[in-house]
Image 1: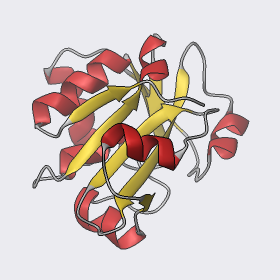
Image 2: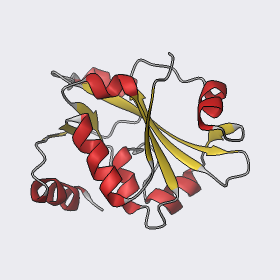
Image 3: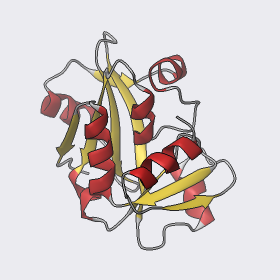
Image 4: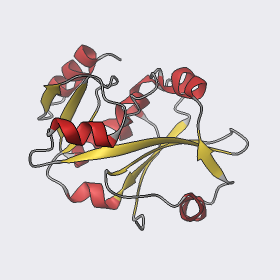
Length: 163
């Protein structure tokens, strides 16, 4: 799903959003230098997998929050976690390196990837995530993001992650 298809979906579902185009960014630090945060919070997104590559997770959390993979493993009741490869990112979510975003889930036809949203993100009026490419940021209410992902059919869990 490209940016125009994603915006059309949001429009069809009556979900308010703002789209900010910008040069390609690959890190939170690069996003911060653009000064796009406004009233929202940029989400940091990580694509994870267990050590047997049986379970995949897309984790979205506050940009300034570190994640403890051992704690997350315990909360999920899974095997040891690590970062998924670029090949897995492309194969499962159709995303290139640097464009990890919860909206990639809409490309997951097999609904294999579980989404984990940090509870702290849900308290913001809007959050910023890429629209499947890192050359723009979509700002929308986090509850609306959660609803879109749940309607797609992937498992979505909101967890209180300790920073």
